[in-house]
Amino acid sequence: ELIAGVLYMSPPPKFPHHFAVANLLDLLTKYRIQARDRGMVLVPRAALWTGTHTYVEPDLFYLTAKTLKQIDWTKPDYADLVVEVTSPGSVIYDCNTKADTYAALGVPELWLIDPELKIVEVRHLNRETNRYDAGEVFQRAAPVRSRILPKFAPKANEIFKR
Image (cartoon, rainbow, N blue to C red; front, side, top):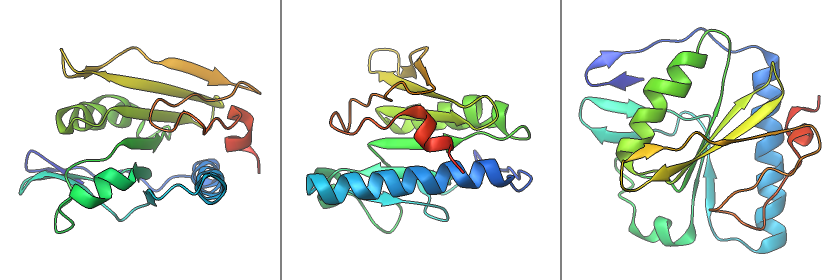
């Protein structure tokens, strides 16, 4: 990833990270089919750009049908919902540097998933400050609530199953 011209490299994640991404992708796909949702879920190496010197690659991001009609596909610079699955080697980078970049892009909802602690934190963008709120934490059988996808509410433990 490239942020303000600085190249960031993270060690490859371990399998709990991969399980969380794969499970969430499955859950989102099932939701989209059942709800006849015309949005799209993208995974790496799909990138979001803020300019020629900054791009980030979220673990997952979701674009609504409305956004799909408006986005510039040569260098997409917006997502409706971004998901980062943290790893011990990238947690500070994901929760701070990348989160700030997503806020600068105007991404309204950010999910931070910690497979080690088995928690999902959902942050919402405050349009006045252009920063994310403290977020709400979901764990165990609690349904994860999304403002972008209000009918999509997987239980947190479904994201972490192996």
